[in-house]
Amino acid sequence: MQKNISEDTQPFPLTLLMSKDGYLNDANKPIGRRSAGSSFLDAYLNFGGNKIHNIVAPDPEASRWFDAKAQAVNSNSTTRSIGIRNWGITAKKTGTFHFPDPYLERWAWRRMLYGDGSISLVGIMHTLSSNGVQKAMSELSSAPIRPWDALICTSTAGKKVVEGFLDRQENYLRWRHGATRFERPQLPVIPLGIDPTIWTTEEDPKSRKKRCRKELNLPKESRLVLIAGRLDFYTKFQPDPLLRILEQLRNSSQPTLELVIYGEALNDEQMIQWKRGAKQLAPSVPIHWFPGKNRDISAPLRWASDVFVSLADNPQETFGITPLEAMASGLPCLVSDWDGYRDTVVQAGESDEPTGIRIPTRMVEGLGTPESISCINGVLGDRPAIGLLSQGIAVDYEYLKQGLNQLLENEPLRSALGKAGQRRVNRIYDWKVVIEQWRALIQSLAERRARAQQAGLTLKPQLPPCRPSLSTAFGCYASEILDRDWEPPAPSAEQEADRLNNPFQAWDQTLLTSYGPRRRGWWLKQGLVRP
Image (cartoon, rainbow, N blue to C red; front, side, top):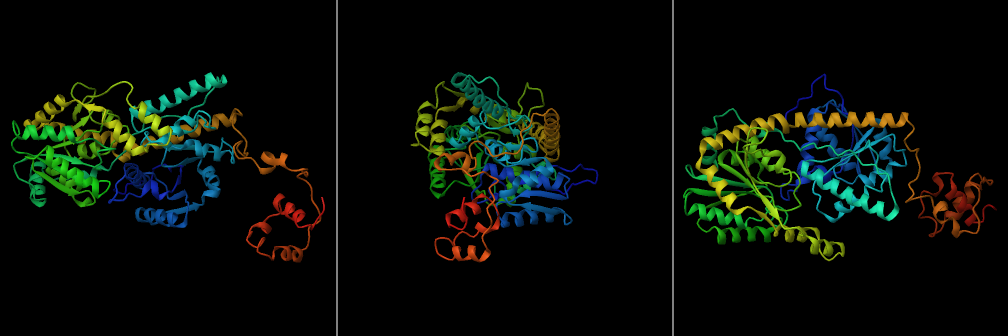
């Protein structure tokens, strides 16, 4: 990503939870949320405008890792890191705390320690289909979420899913408890972004295609269909219908059709299944397999291809970054009319110039009821459940066949769609553009927070009701509760050291670091003072 921090860029008042699990992508095991997090982090460092970075790091290694990335972008930058225990201290300095997941409810309870008017929480959705995430969405209605918090929705469809969870839970609470008032976080639709410069060159597209095919040992004159991304027919897409159609086209109207597959499977077993299934269903289609871990060929493979195909057909997908990469590369997109693809890929007759074709998708009402029951009872995991559900989600077979054939037949159409895709990515999905939507969101949340503080609508710092002090929660266990102001004469340091000098006490290294209720209670336990 280019380094484009201008001198007049306004600082980005944001504290980041620096979990490497959210930002460090593994080429051998690509995961969409990590890829998205890695891309966002690059954008923040390059376009955010901060020279001082405030982060919350769960361990020193994460802090060093982030600082190295920040220094690579700007050697004059400073990283201010704090541990999880005191996360709110640095979050209060910037006013906004971002974590790379949708678990707003966790941090909302933790924020009570600092007062909810001092910090805005900003999470982001990735997949919404897992048990954990669905439970978290429902718990937003009873967690101390405030209107100056936000859950960034990466697609319009994803926002509708979140609103559905909130509607159902609020309706339940109205029925169960007569609840009448709910506060929701802001749900802005802000897409993921990419760096378009990775996917473009000044070279003439036809010359570039010829060069890339030669370098990649791909046929000169064939019409190449590209599949790119994680190869998982449980949680990405079921390739069976596409392979059957490719076989039919190869033996009818598209005798030079060939398939390029670029990606990594979840494991060796699924890769074997992919290759065996492709050979069985499309025996006459030449298939060129390229490992997804080889990132150096990511752009050349797209430049060498004619059509990009992605037929997401399961609830695991929410946004989908690969169509953006294809459009940025100048490729026309043939995608399912599903989740975020509906936002990113425009087809003829819509408000913007078309960049591809979206294939209608259908499911039967009631799909997923048995799987939900099994997941609730803990007898079915997320991945197999998603795999079962995708079997009942159809991508229109005939429409897909016609659309693919249309694109392969019409080179001027492919060129026009590809150029329109590049313009669309540059205008909407370039991180330089997307990051400004983040900046506007943060400013909006700060203004909401300030108005609430002025109106006296915020909560003072306190322990959350789900985790009070022991004397509050379990004080009824004791015979007597001594007043918090009880101050007996302190025993000598020698007496304390003597009582600590045995295996039953020496393990407690923090006992003598503060003069509080625990230490005073220990004096009573040891008979060093009287009540």
